[in-house]
Structures are given as structure tokens and as C-alpha cells.
Length: 514
Image (cartoon, rainbow, N blue to C red):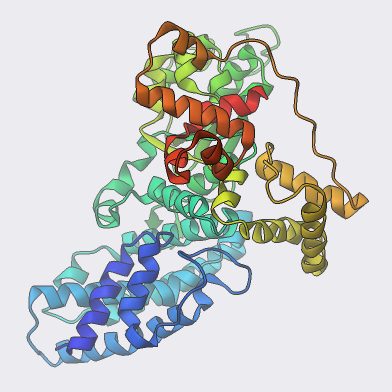
């Protein structure tokens, strides 16, 4: 039923369906699928370069056109009764999935659905009906068992989830460096795991039970990562109502724990009953109670959480159970917990400020955001894209001119090796300052403290292995110099060795201390 060339194409397409789109392997599969028709990409993996939409890329268009022709050819052959082995039927099913996604899921307007209202719901009904009609079109009895065994409502829900996840990551987590590529791929795995076939079969029901811990220096976009994961949760589709079970508005609840007192955190997080404390004039649900099953509560700066509240949070992470302040009734948290910190939680545990059992419950899934300096060390030209994105948000019509202006100012005044201790947040401030005053004055480094860092106390005590000592020393020197290349030159090591030895959690602590 398939020629050698067609089978190679469909084999690659079958893998594309379940491939993490932000890994370099995605582009390799496109190359295999198209052969000599493949148009080389400028990047090692998919990234937003503002020049075209994700589904408007030449290779994607070519694959879509060929896939649509081939799926109709195979359907016609099966309809005529041609025999097909199980492997060919599986490829046919995967081909149908690919075509259905690009014909229907890409029509779902995620931004409009985020705003809520009746208009996007009407459009969802139209898209669903078109999807269902075409799904049934590809049922070719009796050889369509794979299609018959798959619930179209579940597939439609998975397609919607994939669409939301892709756009949330592609549009908001920027950068062309390898660290940025790895971050986007890691966020995708936080939603779907490394095995999307298994996720579609069963894991979609359980991923909200796993807490995600986001670590990295301040100003590196941890909340963007949390938002992307939150807005990418599975939402079932109700066939009778022709609507998704939950709405996207209100699905993301960010809470900065460092900005609240322990008493207020407990009340806001768990809720309280009337009369449970002075000022509690009425019953009030907390963030956990208000979170929908397809949403997430984001606890930023989890390292600042009071030990007494840590105990109550541990119970939520373990079983989902919690109670409002002043009541005995048990309630169940239905959403997903996401936490973030720039602190070294290993140090916090050692000092007795953070519970070890809570830490191990939080980090069942972990994502680390790279520093801006780390991105630029890998790909200096990535600075242009990041500045352009910030400029687009400030003066869209003159973003190119502002980008050029900021780049010239940085080159002339702070230089390519500037460490950017404030990371992306500092770069945003730089762009704004240049826009308003045509200058940016970096914050002078804080005076160094005479107190020895905790890791040097470990050296004094003789408790470190040689690998641990090298890791801490490399991290300390890198924190000071802000460049892998300079650190390698000072230490007499290979740049790749330095990069592999830098401890991100310790780096966050050292950067914060500075």
C-alpha cells in the first residue's frame, strides 16, 4: 500500500506526532520526512524569531500538503478493501492524527479563550463538529480498529492541550541559545512527560498530582515557566454540551510568598471561617479551594515559607487534603501545585529552615531557568532577539529601531561581557531606560561581606568530596566573573567542564548575596 518513499515519510510523521517539538530531533524528523525537499532551518530547534508563525514555516507547509494527499490515498485503498498489516494500520492512524491536528486544532484561538465569553465557545463548537465529521470520514470498516478504539472527544481535548502548551511555550519562553532550547523542551516535558503516547493513554489523568519545582536565579522567567505549565493542563471535552469542562480564565493563580506575612499566607492559601481570628468577619475560600481542576497555584519564593505553614502544605502535596482555618471539614485540592525559588534549598534544609520531606515532595518534577549570561555565553547573538521581544511590548511600531538603539548603547557602554546580574529583568530595565533617557546605569555591585560563604565552611570542616569541591569553586568563580570562558581561563579548565560543574542552586544564592 505504501511505496518506499511514502513509508519513510509516514514513519517520520508518526514519530513527529509524539516528538517534543522544542527538541532538535523535531527538525531532524522534518528533514527525514521531506528528504531533498527539506529547507534548512537557521536554528538548532524551533524558536520564535518573530518572522513567521509556527505553522507558517516552509517545511511544515510541505509536510502538511503531502500528508493530506497521502491520507486520502490510503483511505481510498482501505475503502476498496485492500489488505493492510497492523504496522500499516498504525501508520494510517498516526497520519490521520497529524492531518486532523493541523486542520482543526490550529483554528482554536487560545488568546480568545483566555479572555473568556460566549464567542470563543461558539467557535469551539464549530471546530469540534468539523473535527468529528472528518474523524468519522476516516473510519474505514473493518480495518479501522485503531480509530474506533480512540475516543474522539479525548483526542480533541488532547489536541487543544497540545495547542495551548505549544503557544504558551513558543510565544513566551524566548531565546535561541542552547540553554533556552533546553528550557523550552523541559517545560514541554513537565506537561506531557518524555512519552506522549503513554501520556495520551493514561498519564493525562495524573500529571496534576505531580508538583513542579522551578529553580534558577532571580529575573530569569520562573513565573513565565509556571504560567506556561498552568495554562497547558488537560481539560476534558463534554460531547453533549460541545464545550470544554473548564474555562481558561482563572486557571493560573500566582502567589508571591515573600510579600506576605505567615499569618496572611495561611489564610489566603487555605481560606478561613468566620470568627476563626480577629478580623475574620465572613467565611472565605483560599487559593487552593478556588483553583479549578485544570488550573494551578504557583507558589513563588517557596524558600521563604514559614516552617509552620510548610507542615500544612506538606499535607496538601502528599494527599491533596486541607482545611480552612477554624474548621474541621476536610477539603481536597483538585489542581496542580507549582513552586519556585532562587534559594539553594539544600542549604535551607541543612540550616533547618526548610523541611526535607516537603522538598522531596516538591521536586518530583524540576525545571531550572538559565541566567541571561549563560544564554549569551552560548549564543551572543541571542541578545538581539531578547531585546526585540521587549521592544515589541513597548513600541511595536518602532521595535526594530529601538532594538538597534539599545544594542548600540550596550555595545558602547557596558560591553559584550557584562554579566547581567539582574538577568532578563535587568535587560528589560535597560531597554526602558534607553527608550526614555538614552542611557542605562547598571546597579553598582554590593560591597562584599566578610562572612565566609557556607560552602567554604564545608571546606574548613573537610566534608566535601573532590567533585563537590570543584563544583563549588567553579560556581563561586563563575558567579564573580559572569562568563564561562573567563572562568575556564582563570581555573585552567575546559569551558565545557566549567559549565558542567556550575551548581545552579548555589549560583542563585551567590548571585543573591552579591
